[in-house]
Image (cartoon, rainbow, N blue to C red):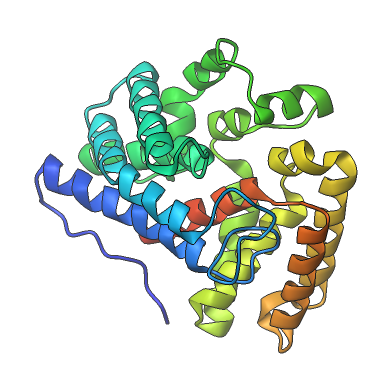
Length: 283
């Protein structure tokens, strides 16, 4: 049985924050290295992207290393959301400088940053509750209030245009899709297969089948979102990565996604986030 990363108790806040930060980068690298991921950048190819590749993502990850340590420390200090937001904005600037202006990890800066802050607070306070609940209870109202002041983005425009839940609402409510759909899929696949690769695919497709992915809505509108949801649901209904032959079916959806210029970036963030939860012993 594969076990999550074990955090050792009784260490200083600085060491604890550094360890949480390393777990966040590990989760992001684990997401990046998985293939095939429909329409997404992976070691296989660039997916539906002409402006980024594995090298772009690796430069971004290097630039983001200090951020996850910093936001974990801020969470441990019970900082308000405004402080977390400033750290996230600075991290985005470093990301864009490292990638030549390409957005590789904005969603992950937001969602995994909040979870890392919650991990810091949980350890210092000795809490025994899920990280998502800490995010919701401690920063939820501020997260939603900040959304009314934020500059328009592809995601926020998709939320308004299609009337779907966005990343801010997911975070403010404690990441319900992550906890109810993606994390159980990951744990089930790990229990059945003992394989991180297959578990990652199963978790990714579970997210794709349920999440109202604003990146898909931006690229393909509702037809694009429906296409990915239906194909991912069919993949899971047939056994998904728990059965033989899963790779060929996943590759077929990858090719079809590229042909339609579709890229489920929101589900990629969910995959990285679920690996971070796993690294913190959740589930």
